[in-house]
Image (cartoon, rainbow, N blue to C red; front, side, top):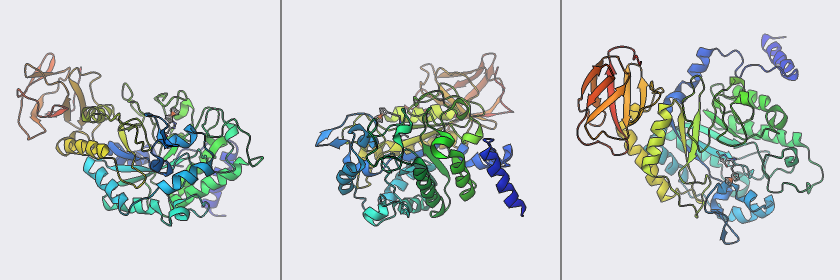
Length: 469
Ligand code: H79
């Protein structure tokens, strides 16, 4: 018996006993840091929600389903069974050639370092060519959309993540009656096909994931969605087996915490704001505040805020509540200053094209990042608990000051920063600034006008490791 077989057996025995081995068996803290390094440095990613719901665009029976909220949930919102939904949605899902290259360019131009896209959302429609499903892009369109998207993203040098819903509103063995908290369009109704066997759904789910991790080259992120307090983890998804499968196929992969819903896995409640600032790595690599930025950083916990540009994830023609450039850029800065990542969503239309407003917003972020990206990429959380005029990030002995409110008297104080400054300059154009260390902290003399009305960055090179009193 080889050592490897022995190890595999002991893992199985431990798992069977309910003793869970670490997220990556035998991974040291240094190994984990190395695996997480690119993601921690990236700070900014683009999320894409795109599937059958995109063509419906928030409209059912010729009427808006809502003017706000997630229209990727339209099947659930109108309580349609999967056949009714598919019949209406499939003819409207018409990916035009080259759509993925447009996404990749938008992400690249915005300064995003990675893209996470929906390989399957709750409606159950798979964007790849699946051997275990006929509810997939290959059966319906004779295309492998995952392949097209991955190739386009790689061509732009972007890291690739798969959003994969473990909730499934299509599969005829998915036992939606097992959870009161997880949504299903037919919730409360008896199974039309008599009894269901959730284990059959799980075999299908694992097989789909296996395909996704085997056929498209390296996958950088697996973004699971989602679990409930009353149905999660091993019971609901055979989660530890799913994670082990994922790691065995993609050793360097980074996974979120959504196969679980417990405090140890970073959850406080069923609300998407209900995160806990803790995460045992056996439940995933990062926690996932949704549509919400935590008030403070969380030392020792990796986190990523995912957020929409308007209020829906999947495209809706009725949602015009677009966030301003100021909000988006300041959100990115705020998140970086707290040591997190920003995963910002676009919802392409049924033909794959991206709404003009989204293209414009992503471009505005990119324009800011072209000048100021140095103060975001590869930085760490602020050394200061609160700055009245803006935010700060750090990189070694460099402190970046992101000024939101430019001082009227041209004097900026960084309270408590006692380390002497070797040099200070505006990141835009490199204009040198006078910097003096005083009893109150570092005092900078600024030009009268802010270089950027949204966030102007000042780089301060310190004489030694920063000390803040
Ligand atoms: O994929 C996106 C959402 O569809 C999914 N996670 C992100 C990344 C998600 N699942 N649950 N939730 C978000 C929270 C539930 C929000 C709800 Fe609603 C509010 C469910 C019903 C009201 C938003 C608005 C979804 C449908 C309408």
